[in-house]
Image 1 (cartoon, rainbow, N blue to C red):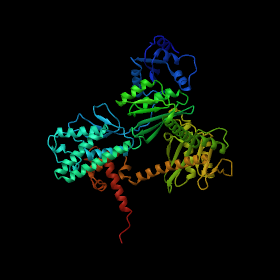
Image 2: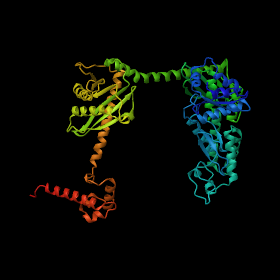
Image 3: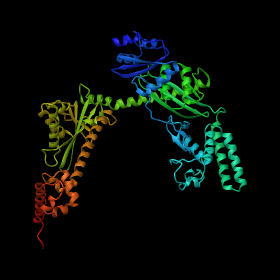
Image 4: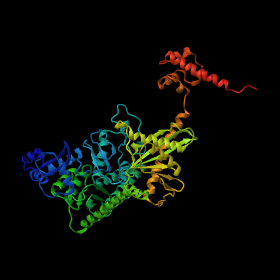
Length: 616
């Protein structure tokens, strides 16, 4: 505890509020308390903390507080501060799932129906969320058939009416863009939509029935049939909302599973008595924290941008009354927060907890598989090669060329069993002519290890712990000889592709690993990655050489002058036929440069004529 913290602890008030723990000016944790003095003091007492809290306290070098009038105000402020600062030690949900809402902006003269993924404080009305695309699609289709509101993005009213779109022709829009309805007529339909979305179906059905009878009396039988179908669809939707439970229950069931290291929160969604879906949320480093605190923090983050159900059932929670008030404010309606101890609701919590346990087990299993394929595979490889240490940096090399032309080599790097693509390097073969992979490998390995002996540290490459050469014993001999010439020796082996055999220096018999071995899979990945990287670079060079221009071979003619020449003359033929005087007229081309172009192209043309066969 430094002097700053000691001084601030002595000045803490007995008041509700929020505290912000800091490390070097950065906020690392935000919390709220009914009594700031007692709560903040508890972090710096010599008492046992959970591993997460102990780690956090060890990094705190300062803290700030924000006073509030009530605990509910502190709860709201805590939620906002966590969203704003995203502190490392708070629970932060990483998912980007946003359930859709139906949006109607009543500030528009002719409000339109639209779908929004996240409610905004913009004065519009939002209804939802609808869990799943099918649910909102069904409601939107019904609304378009029953209530002909526009869905277009035109800014109405227009200065000049336009021809209405096809939605007007099929009876799914009133045509305000064409001036075919007044604002009052349009608003009357909007009110029906609002009533419908608030759950008041019966007045809507009565109005639709009256409109149907009026259309029938006026002999508008097609319109009457459309209204009849709308009434049927509305009643069908009403039945779906009430088919399972007479009370049309809306519930969110939330439970927690901890394994001592991490935690998993499970949320199940029940609407109209039916299970509509479930989500699992990973909570790293929360495996030993108090379940009540974890779930309370989770509720704040989960409902920060979601609409809570009418009843939220949780396994455990602290400050239930304040949390319930906050949920009601989020919903702008009644919400009940329940922590059941027995009965049907407790059974639902246990079901959610069982799902959380399953999700956490699957997450841990996936992590174990990843470790087995990376660090575990490296350990197994070290045993297979007889190494007395576990190699961390593995480098793989390969050669690629086309009949000895444009020979290149690749170096790929795997660190802790995973590719480190920023460390990959290409080489152009300089000293070897023709298709000689042995000599090419020798050159590349020598150049690579000389890079570890550069004087300047920024130009120096780190030494590998293990080197993989694509090929058998002969490739390995050339590669190892190149390494030893530089005065460096690190473990090296070759992998022959035909039988996937491992060749080691000074050992005639190859090593064969189990085809299912993670170690073999790892070195195959290194070998295949080095091959892919080499052949990709070779193809790029080959493609560039295929479009090589004769202008590129002329000294003093860079990319800018080449572009200027082609822009002026359009074709290479025209450039070759131009006189030296005409070449000088090109913008940016000096007299010596024009002379060089003229000589180079005319000498080339003369050489081509000399090489032509004599006429018969």
